[in-house]
Length: 166
Image (cartoon, rainbow, N blue to C red; front, side, top):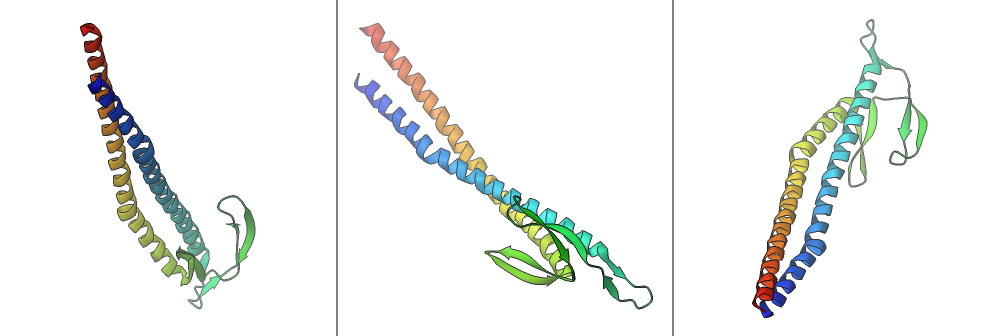
């Protein structure tokens, strides 16, 4: 009976480790990956809007100067929950959120270049790293569950043996 109790104790210990450590780590890793995917999606939307603005800038063939008509648009002011109409009178310079609450004034070509590089960085480095972390933790959970299953089978064999010997 002593070996059986010790095995039950180990099973409970591994079960607690899975539920209190590994599963929260997996949840955190998946959420971080999803946040990066959402950020890439937001930058892709911004890239599309910047391209639209770029197309709206017309070059006058006589003076070779760029003329810009004001652009009417709808602006997200509350994380895709509240929108308002806006008119951009001078779309040659815009403010871009570069992270950590900072917004930088950029020319349209600078903003397009920034967004292209940011999306490349997020996709190539950040998303790959966060995906690898999530896969590693998922594999750890899978291995721990397999170990728990094996310990349960061992306990059943041990208890079946002791019942036959009684």
